Amino acid sequence: MKAQTAPRTARPRITGHRPDTPVRAWLRLVRVFQKIEQASIDDIRRAGLSMGQFDVLAQVGATEGSTQQQIADALLVTKSNVCQLLDRMERAGLVERRQSGRTNLLYLTPEGRRLCDRIIPAHERTIAELFSALATEEQAELLRLLRKLDHALP
Image (cartoon, rainbow, N blue to C red; front, side, top):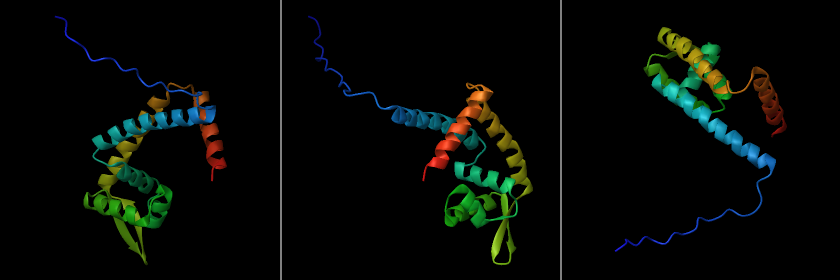
C-alpha cells in the first residue's frame, strides 16, 4: 500500500506590481549594508571588541584629546552611552581619561594604540575587499550618489 502524503498547499503568491525603483534601491541598500555590517562585526568581535567599542577606539585614536561630548557627537550617541563604553574600555586598559578643568580628555593607552593600529587597517582592508566588486570609478560614483542622497535628507 502506498503511503499517503499530505495534500500540497499552494504557496501564497505575491500579487500586485513590482515595487518602484526607490523602494527596490532602498531594499538593496539595506541588504548590502547588512552584509557589510556582518562581515565588520565578525572581524571586530574576533579582536574582542563590540561595535560600539570599535567606534570609540577609532574616534579616540583619530582625535586624541577629545572630550567625551565630542566623541558622543561624532558617534551620534548620548554622552551616557559613551560613558559606559569608556568605563569598560578604561577597565580593559584601552583608553584613559585625563581631567582638564571640568571635562575629561580622552587618550588611548599604549595597549589601546597597539590595538587601534592593528584593527583599523584590518577593518579598512575588509571594507575594501567587500567593495572590490565595484571598479574604483564605480566606488567613487556610489559615494557621490550616497552623499547627494544623504545631504538631501532631513
